[in-house]
Image (cartoon, rainbow, N blue to C red; front, side, top):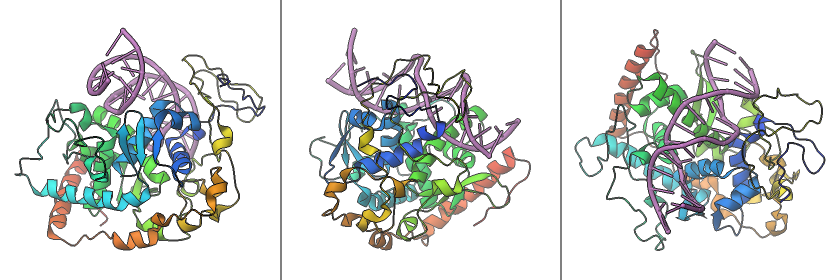
Length: 385
DNA sequence: CTGTCCCGCCATGCT
DNA sequence: AGCATGGCGGGACAG
């Protein structure tokens, strides 16, 4: 634990602060790369933080969205169960159903958890997430705790819930493209307050980044508006073979680096960034340093063998998949990750926007969206759908 | 300038 | 009290 506090890396290679290497999306990719392998059953947050060289706080972000998508399930304090990507389809299906249901029943009491707190509150959906992912979990008797007390204002604003609601936007509405700003307004169900919307958008960026790293969505631009927006790729994206390679690096100006940063290089608040120049460590000026176990060799192995993960089809999670594979090369041979058969998964899970409820829902939101648009923007736009 | 979004403070929840 | 979680927004960075 040679606390590499300073910027100067211990291994000689200088590390100047690089925001790109710290992105949630990259971190998520590395996280997935690190744990998506044979034998992984549980994940310790501390372990993850150490291996990835980031603070715990960041792990929470990732874990929260991954959990909301079904990839992980909280098992205990500090511990998560790896469910794998195979759990995604059912999780999404569930979200979709919930989304349709909650919309559909303005009367059904039961789920009206809507603790209309202060001003505008998030809602659009009120559902108790978690539970879904697994059935085999006697450990946490009753899977959920405070089901009794739903007045958990905090949970309503959780990243996990927001993630699910964000996903529902795509699953339950026909819009396959939406800007984070609009998403925020819709999710706030009254995004009149600029400050609140901005805050929500910030969160959505976090979410979008991890979803994008998994290629569930992709960044694009609205046809006319030119405004940045995200398009839903869903499971489809996973099944195609060549096209799914790089969600980030290609469509991004913000192409991130290839390697994992697992040094606590912090951005300097005052130091101007001296790109590629001197080896000048970053002055970490404030803050306690992160206890970093420096396991560079752990995830640092570029492997030049993109297809070594045979059964993954050509699907590679994250932007840098091709070049970076965890060290488990050893156990690579007999790994039969049939659960990654996106081909069949995609076939099984097919969005079916053909029922009435969905149409109604869509119509409803289209209306809402339009009105909000005309409110905030002087020029009403037509929805592409 | 606008769009992104990292960072870590600190409120909150759980022992 | 102490540790685990994670909301939240300041402000750095990118285009």
